[in-house]
Image (tube, rainbow, N blue to C red; front, top):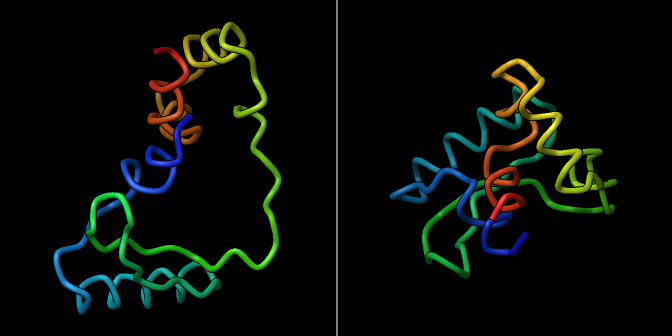
Length: 94
């Protein structure tokens, strides 16, 4: 999976900094982590995200082979596809 898919294409893009900051505050309050708006180096738009103080472990679906991922996606409820990240599944199947 490319960095562009991870860092840009799967995230919401905001038109103004003011809107992005408002959503970031709401996310921070909801999830208890500091979310901040930032300028994307790929699309030059605004996204929100958390600061990565420590590396996060890769989710199980990122360690799956192509066949295992396909089997999991096809046998799981529809909501699972969105939980594991539709962008990742599409990228893996290319």
